[in-house]
Every structure is written in C-alpha cells, then in structure tokens.
Length: 241
Image 1 (tube, one colour):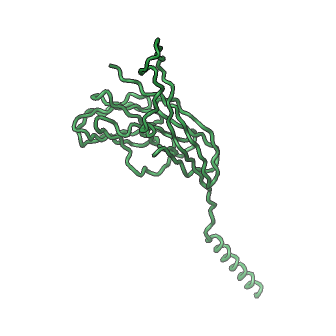
Image 2 (cartoon, helix red, strand yellow; image 1 turned 120 degrees about the vertical axis):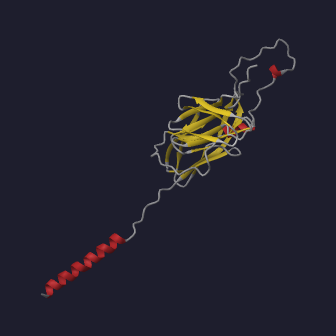
Image 3 (cartoon, rainbow, N blue to C red; image 1 turned 90 degrees about the vertical axis):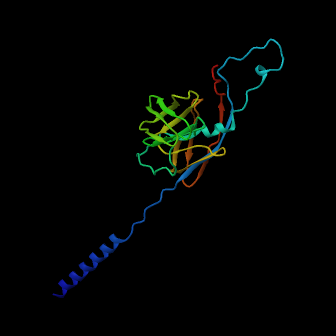
C-alpha cells in the first residue's frame, strides 16, 4: 500500500515538473541585423550626341567641357536590393505615397514604391491636369480633374512606369515599382538600407537616364557595409523646338 502511494506521489511530482517546464517561456534566438549605407555622387557622363567639330579654336559652347549634373538630380536616384526573396508582407509606409501636381510639375519626379502599393496624384494647381501612363508595367488614364481633387492608382507589377499629363506635354514622372521594400532615396547625398540578415546581396543604383549599376556585397550581423556610388550621368535631352 505504501509502495503504491509512493509511486503515485512520484508520478504527481513528475507531472508538475513537466508542466512547469512546458510553461516556462522559451528563449528565441535573435537574428543579428546589418545595414548598407553610403554616399551617392553624380559625375558628368558621356552624351549620346555626336561631338561638334570646330575648324577654329575660338571659344564657344562646342569647346566647353561637360557640365556636372544639377545637384537636385541626386533625389532621382534609387538604391535598392535586387533578387531578395520576399513574402509580400511589409509595414505600411510612414508617409502617404503621392506624386503631387504643383506648378505644372510632378513632385517628386521619381517615386520608388513596393509592388502592391497605391499612389495618390493630388492636383495642387489652379487648372486641370490629366495624369496617364502607357507603360507596359501599368497603363492608366485618370482623366481631367481640377485643383483640390486627387485620384489614385494601385501598382501590382514591378517595373518602370512613366507618367505624363495629356494637357501639359512637358510634365513627366517615374514610378519605380520594386519587389521588396529594401530600397532608399539619397537625402543630402547619403542613404541607408537597414534590417538586413547576414548574407550576400546585389545592390543596384538606378536613374532613369542610365542603365542600372550593380555591386555585390556581403552584410554581416550587427555590422555596417559601406557602398559608395559615383554615377556618370549624361545631360538631359534638350527639348525640340
């Protein structure tokens, strides 16, 4: 009889111990995250136009060296990570995704977005605009709408979407639709892409007037990988008379 009670007591103690072990919070190992950061500089690029041949050495436009790109062009560069597996889930953007129509100009001129995002096109001008695109990535026509109103477009496919206005032919913008949220636009010539697991990455610098430039880098946990860029940028095409 005493032996049975002893075995029962031992079994009860064992069950309580197992329950306490199961209830204990488990320690989840934290995966160290790294980041990529650096600077972006623009340099004069070669123009596709044929050089002017001057018979005399007089001073003039044909003899001047290439001019550096305007400093504001840095804001039209996008640095992103290519071919990164992504589960399609991302935190919502901290600020509204929008391209404003202001002073008969699209602002910003270049907007990178995650695939599946919706972009607003508010009209802030005291006149009508008609925003449209014939790009293969996304074709749309928002029709004419006045100041104080806005229309939106959802971008489901990745790629380049060139945006124009039917009423003002000199207005243009670009929506760069990417497959993951690991991208950045330089601010004051600097950029940061963070929260990266350790591994090998292909980093791409994009601008609408050049072919994308890529570098392969390795990111370590809790470390900073510096990737600087000097981008040769040809001058914009002069408008035809």
